[in-house]
Length: 288
Image 1 (cartoon, rainbow, N blue to C red):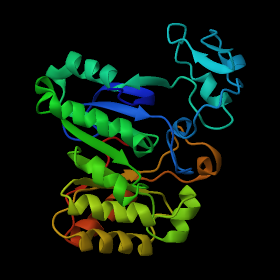
Image 2: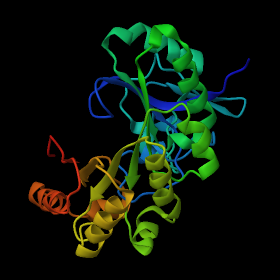
Image 3: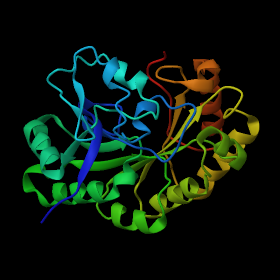
Image 4: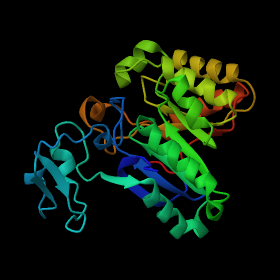
């Protein structure tokens, strides 16, 4: 049987901030949002083999042959100059990986891992790969006990979630904004599917964490926080909420001029959520 492949921008063999425990993390290439506040904007686009990045590479790790861009990891020094040169926010260093490739990594590092998280970009754009990978992990007795998590913006339809949730242990879902106009301005997309996805994952018992980005003078307004409280309350039962603080690392465009979220502002929102009976509420452990 031919299992699907995925284009992956980066693999972290160890992470304690992408779900519970120590996790292997896959950052899949491509996103259906265009978030102004994105800290990984080079994961948004898909390479179109234009070759504009080639002159930017000081070690000739990139080349064009037969109309296709080729990346040689052995020559790469991770200077990331090619990322800045790409006109469509694509990562020319993204490589195809098979399900078998990732299973090999998991076997190699199994003794140190609690699970695997697929992130991005937006991993649900490659749902076939994620579903096949998670199913293969579940079927492998040597990988028993590893949990499979998805870090998503939620822009996946109900039918897509139906298959994915059957092999997923937890979903970490980002809500960029609750006001429809604000969400559209910040991401270029409606938030209707994201809100629906949170409800779908919660009803399935798979919503591990709601994530909300605090952007001063935008997502921290009284109206936005009231909507967050109402939405989380309507889900029912204890719901883990992670508040992330906007900062400028990796950000491009208009958001480079936005204010960073100070610790005090995030703590104020966290206290409002706790006072409303929500939680546990998680705030950043490290401040940039």
